[in-house]
Length: 147
Image (tube, rainbow, N blue to C red; front, side, top):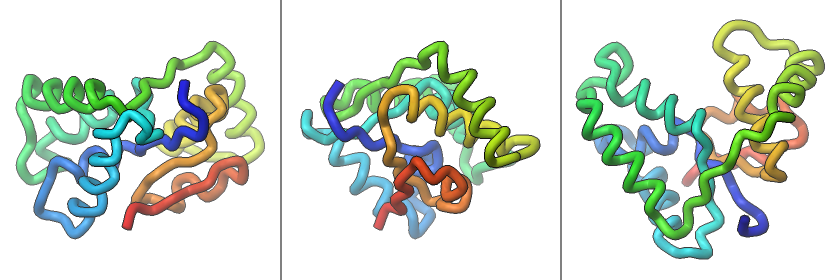
């Protein structure tokens, strides 16, 4: 695994495929870095599943994608030479339990803790996201907003 990986949050992937947002261009620029084998970017299965859920849901996006179209985008992302697919080590479960005990969350916020735990279990401390507040509570992480 390349040193100094940075995880792409779900929202970066979503904005990269929807051109009707001001966040589209910074998201695309960041994803384009993955065209270089030294891009140093990564995703995990949770991010990809969340991406699929968002882009195929008409309640969440104005122009939902068909499942096959969303899968094609996921496959294209995974084929980029500068993208690493992180595994989900068994210790991830213990990690997110510890994070939630330290920084209590409820409801869907547990998924941010799970993502943070997956990152930390893989030695990844940087996340690119448009939702800084979701990850700012985890002092171990460096939260970067794409510009």
